[in-house]
Length: 136
Image (cartoon, rainbow, N blue to C red; front, side):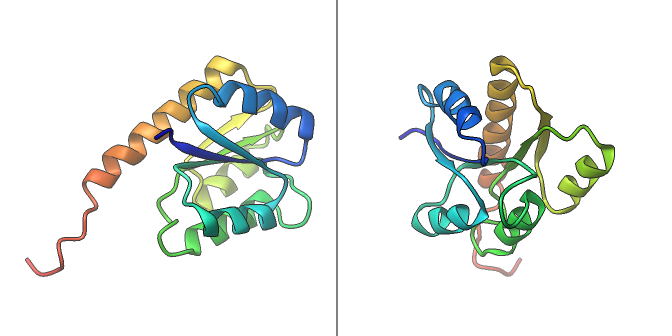
């Protein structure tokens, strides 16, 4: 089964481009805002979320905070992909639980490399966070 990636961005043309880069290898779902993300994660846990900071309604910071507060989703990697080159936005995105940060415009190879690294990191962490039932 292909890894599942949710991409949250309110620019349809950009979504189309990134979707075409992801789809051969991953199951990619394009979402336009934080509300659509909230509904999608209830239906299926993604392996990775790619998210813009600037969205209609709740911004990416708030959407990431909500994702991190949802039981079972707190470990899903979140890659922020945004036009913001501001250091303060980078720091804030990491502060709310972001796993990575890329700025637009982004190249295909750069994005796919970041996706592969975050998915690999998630698989490794998952191996070592197995609940053994408590106790020593």
